[in-house]
Image (cartoon, rainbow, N blue to C red; front, side):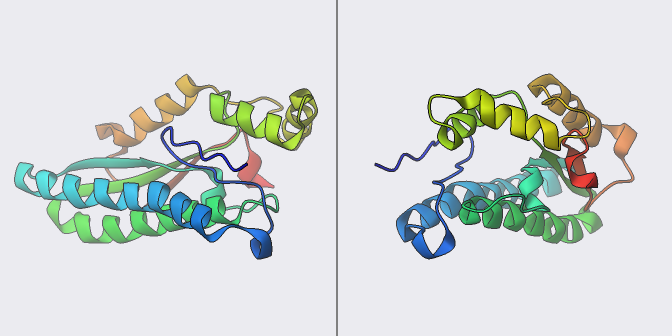
Length: 175
């Protein structure tokens, strides 16, 4: 039985492209990509009226790096989010609207725990050990650490940035 997890984003199911259910692919794209699109569509209108602002899209390191098989819908949706950010950054710049994306890597969250369990049913610690071994910093990030990156990117301290990708991934994208 397939389970979609609708909290914040959707990671879909673990299947090869040729076996991936089209309805699940469509659902992942609808939640992840359409959600970002609609947020941009409406936020940009309000920000133009207000004279500008900062939009930070929270995506995933999967937006620039496909690390594993069996997650085509998720990776495609995260790449699409980065593409939307780049387009919105170009469109928003003349109006003082900055648009950037933060790409968390493995973060100690419920979603990562679901992934660990799905890859090693009954023994999620095996998947955790494998993931940790791939991280140069050898630890998951925390939600607070990711939030701090988001806060910086949104702040006036980053006022020169638009169209930028900020990896909050423990060094995963470096390798």
